Length: 100
Image (cartoon, rainbow, N blue to C red; front, side, top):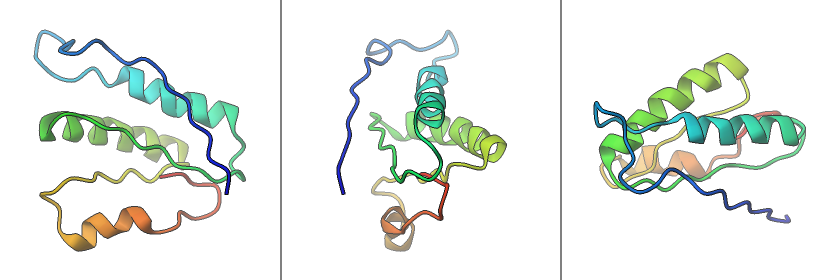
């Protein structure tokens, strides 16, 4: 299966709002860009690396709201505090028309 990568510059390191919360808008725009660029029939997933649990939780919360709206994403966090069963979910194949 061919792999396509796109490296997009993200927010500058340490750039957070005054409440010190991760600005998730950049990441949600990437999800929207994928939704507009690729048809639902084309398989593919998105992997985002973040620096800590606080940032992961903030993005997961916002991405799940987007996923509920579009019905085209399954949002799965992946970090060492999750059980093996939760971590293994990232290896499941998404249903047709849905990305992880």
